[in-house]
Structures are given as C-alpha cells and as structure tokens.
Image (cartoon, rainbow, N blue to C red; front, side, top):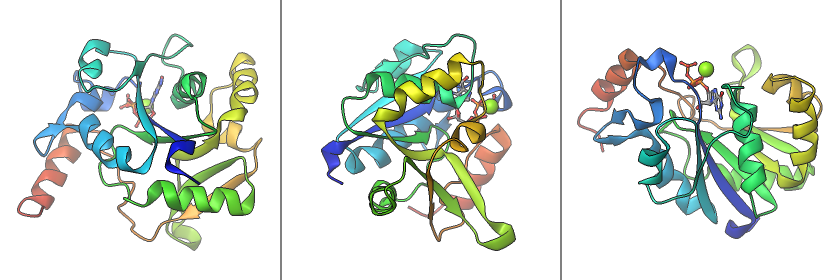
Amino acid sequence: MELNDVTGLILAGGRGSRMGSVDKGLQTFRGKPMVKHAIERLSPQVGSVMINANQNLDVYKGFGVPVYPDEIQGFAGPLAGLQTGLLHCRSPFLVTVPCDSPFFPLDFVSEMGTALLSENGDLAVAVTGQGEQEQPHPVFCLVRASLLPHLSDFLQSGQRKIDKWYATLKVVPVRFADENAFSNINTLDELTKWEERLAGSQ
Ligand SMILES: Nc1nc2c(ncn2[C@@H]2O[C@H](COP(=O)(O)OP(=O)(O)OP(=O)(O)O)[C@@H](O)[C@H]2O)c(=O)[nH]1
Ligand SMILES: [Mg+2]
C-alpha cells in the first residue's frame, strides 16, 4: 500500500466529557495539544491528514489540516466521525486514530495495510494482548473508502454501535506487541499520571 493510497483521519468529534469541560483533543499533554501529537505521528504514515471535530472548529483549523464536523448531528459516536471522513476521503483507503492516544506505533499504517491487503478484508482493526487478554481497539482502523454507502445505510437505519457495524464486515485483526501502544487518555487524572510516568524520557 502506497502512502498516497491512505488518508488519515483524527477522530476528535466526541464530547470529551470525562476530561471535564475541556475539548479532549485540545488538552495539553507534554507541552502540546493531544491532537498535535496525533497529527505529528500520523502525517509521515499517510498521504494526507484530516481532523473530525464537532466543537472549537476554528481552533482545530489552526493546525493546518482540513477539519470536518459530523454529518449526523448530536454526537452519534465514532461511526459518525468515520462516515464524515469517508465523505471527504479522496484515496482508496482511510485510516482512523483517536485524538487521545499519543503513543500509537510509527509503523501502524504500514502494518495495517499489509494485513488488510494480504487477507483481502474490508477493514483492519488493531489488537493487543493474546487469549483472554486480547483487546481490540476499534477506533484504530483502516477501511476501504468504498464502504461509505454501506456505513451510511447502517447509520440511516438508526444503528450506532461500532462493533455491530464491524460484525457486518470482513474484519482483519492486526496484532501489535506493545501493550501500551493504543492506551488512551480519558481523564485529567490519567493525563497527569502519564506525564509523571514519562517525565525525563524523550
Ligand atoms: N465524530 C464523533 N466522534 C466521536 C463521538 N463520540 C466519540 N467520538 C470519538 O471516538 C473516540 C473514542 O471516544 P471516547 O474515548 O469515548 O471519547 P469522547 O466520547 O470524546 O469522551 P467521553 O465523553 O469522555 O466518552 C474519540 O476519538 C472521540 O473523539 C461522536 O459523537 N462523534
Ligand atoms: Mg465517549
């Protein structure tokens, strides 16, 4: 899969209610907004990056990449963000990362792309752990852009759950060894803990 075959979508369209009154993607982590961590980590792995956000759009636009709010109003969940990304995607594949997970692998997209093509799947999803510890990370996915009508039908029927939509597809799980690779930061308390834990490291 070539770099230009993939558009990167940063999912920042949630309410961020567990973070308090602050927009989660705009919350400072280790000296810069969380969404900036995501942009910097994702940009080298894709042809272009865009942001899905539903609040503070002008602030998000300041990061120099396109920003799109959900087509469906009312915080319909991450699938609404994915639909928005697919509507604006001009490449055959779209990859998503959430705005609150600053540690995802630098070879994330290439690993996902290789697996999706070799298995000829509809969608690849990141997985960590094994056996009983196995954990999927559904907002880390690589999808074929041709799935837009299928997703829109699903949302049109009133369904919202990401796992339910995945159950309708040929999903390729892609295992990553680092247990913390997809850790996300949902509260100010978690943010402080990660900052303390990483203090002194690069
Ligand atoms: N576009 C869009 N994205 C969403 C929506 N809800 C959640 N997300 C995104 O989905 C990802 C995972 O969601 P959560 O970790 O629950 O984030 P959140 O909903 O903003 O935070 P909480 O309000 O604390 O649950 C994040 O990247 C969110 O930005 C939504 O209604 N629309
Ligand atoms: Mg949520």
